[in-house]
Length: 259
Ligand code: 1SD
Ligand code: ZN
Image (cartoon, rainbow, N blue to C red):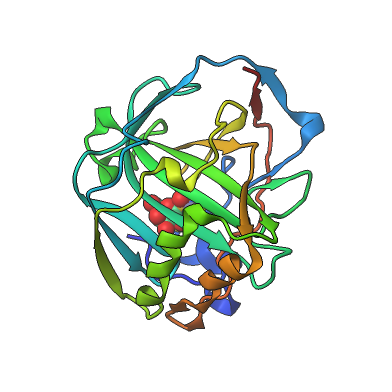
C-alpha cells in the first residue's frame, strides 16, 4: 500500500493525489501549522505509557525509501492509553522526517515555525488487532510526534541509534539489532504538555485515521546528529528531505493539554 511516491518533482506531495485519492481534498489532512492563538486549552486524563521504559529486545531498522523506520521483531510491545485516546494503542513503528537544512524538516509546524527533525511513533488501536486493519477506522491510529531543537552538544541518548544508521544508507537496506534502547530513550521525559488534533497519515494513502499528539517539549540534537539522516538514499537519489508541507486546518479544533 502507498509505496510509490517521493518528495520531489512529479512524484512529490503535489502529485500524490493523482494516484492516491486519499491525499486529495480531504478535510483532515496532516501535517498542519499549529497556531498558538488558535488552540483550545483542555485538561485530558493523564497519558499512560506501558513498557516504554524497557529496553527493546530485537528490533529491525530499515530504509524503506521514504524514511529510517524502526519496528519490533521480538519482545514486549509497548502501548499507550489515556489523554484523548479512548482505547489502548499498541506500538507499530517509529520513523523520522527531516529537511535539506536545519531550518526545515518537521512536518507539523508551530506558529509557522519548522523544526529540523520530527519523530513519529505510530501506534494502532488494539481493538482493530493490527496496523493494516486499523487504517479503515477513524480512531484506528495515534501518532506520538516529537520535535527537535539544535544544540552544540551531542545527545548521548541518540548515539546508539545513530551508530546503526550507516547500515541502512542504501535503499531497502535492513539491519536487526539485538538488545536495544527503550522507547523512552528517544523522547523527552516531560510528556504532559502536548497539542492534539484529528488528522491523517502524512504519506500516501494519507488515511484520515490519526489522533495526533504533538509534544511541546523538544528533543535536543546536534547538527552532526541531524545531518546523519540526510545520507540515506531513496528511490531517486539521496533522501535529503522527506517532509510533507502543512495542509489546510479547515474547521478542526487543536487542543492543548493543560496538566
Ligand atoms: O510516513 C509514515 C509512513 O512511513 C508510514 O509509516 C505510515 C504508516 O505507518 O505513516 C506515515 S506517518 O503519517 O506516520 N508520517
Ligand atoms: Zn511520519
